[in-house]
Amino acid sequence: MNKVLLVTGGSRGIGAATALLAAQQGWSVAVNYTANSLAADEVVRQIRAQGGQAMSVQADVAEESQVLRMFEHIDAKFGRLSGLVNNAGVVDVTARVDEMSVARWKRMFDINVIGSLICAREAVRRMSTRHGGEGGSIVNVSSAAARLGAPGQYVDYAAAKGAIDAFTIGLAKEVAAEGVRVNAVRPGLIETEIHASGGLPNRVRDLQHLVPAQRGGTAEEVAQGIVWLLSDKASYTTMSLLDISGGR
Image 1 (spheres, helix red, strand yellow):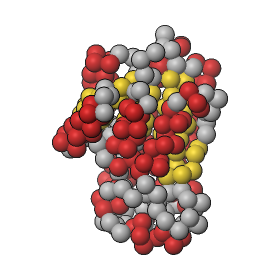
Image 2 (cartoon, rainbow, N blue to C red):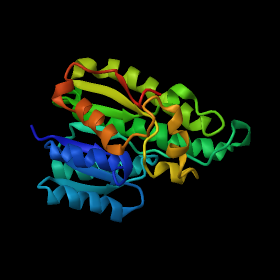
Image 3 (cartoon, helix red, strand yellow):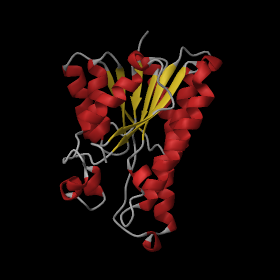
Image 4 (cartoon, one colour):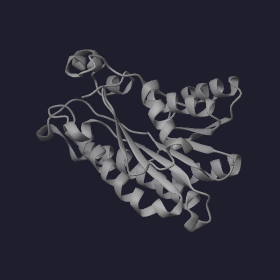
């Protein structure tokens, strides 16, 4: 079976590491990006240089029309989807809840939650045996923040990731008999650019003393868990929330 994978937010960090590793394991990878086409194209270039198949595809996952167009492009180029990594997400600057705006919360949930739901819906419509599909795997990228709450920093992000955990559990049960597995990874402190986008470029270094493993993780370490969950090696694994957090 031709293994076709979509990685949202695939141009950097955990998404890029996942796209590269999945391609090495035989997936044809669609690398989604919102605005940075150069970064996405570079991931595609690296995959092709290693003999893999890849394409870049633009879409803001919070915009349904853009997501529908993205899936149509993938259908036309690679065929029916068999894997989805819901990785696209944002944080915001450090703030207490009593300092946050409704506009911030809407952006947080539109991208981190609604975007993941739209992509998962379209993936199920292609993967599920109920819709004539041949099965598949969805991996949602949650966060250890869903357990920890992120007080004083970004409770709204933690709440959005808590929603992703609940969505993972519910959807997994809903489509388990239709050949579709749904799992999530919950990364802890990982060395990626997302911290700088939230105004805390040294966050991992500043907090690594709180991690039992005494260090931050790498995007590649998270990618290993994601690609395993996508694979047939995880054929009896669904509804799982895999913590990749160094014990925190």
